[in-house]
Image (tube, rainbow, N blue to C red; front, side, top):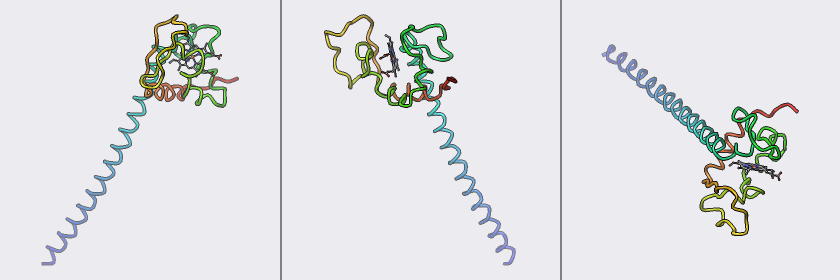
Length: 142
Ligand code: HEC
């Protein structure tokens, strides 16, 4: 009888430990998937920027000698205190309305705007991804 009680205690302790470890594993799994998806968003933003923004903007580690002289580099823009806001609404700031269309958000291109380049079509998710990517850029020393 005594032995049986001891076995039960060991059994209970083992089960308790298993439950605790199960929760730790679950928690680690959740953290790692969140981390992975944050990285995916950044990678997506990097691709959108590489594809559409480097034509005019200099972006660190992408096109140090590219871009158009009159266009601010992405790194330099991070000196501005409100750079995040500018990236959130960049498609409304000139010259972008003439070339960037956010699907389901922007109005059809106004006929009077110059159609000098192929329109860049983006989803609102892409704008968030661009911001996530630009957050990872180092602000250069002034
Ligand atoms: C056709 C050239 C061109 C392309 C392509 C372009 N930009 Fe720009 N962008 C400019 C110019 C020129 C300015 C500076 C406007 C000014 O000085 O008022 C600018 C300014 C900006 C600014 C600062 C806006 C402000 O008024 O403060 C942001 C943010 C920006 N661009 C983001 C982007 C992103 C993100 C992309 C890619 C999806 C992109 N741009 C693609 C030409 C371009």
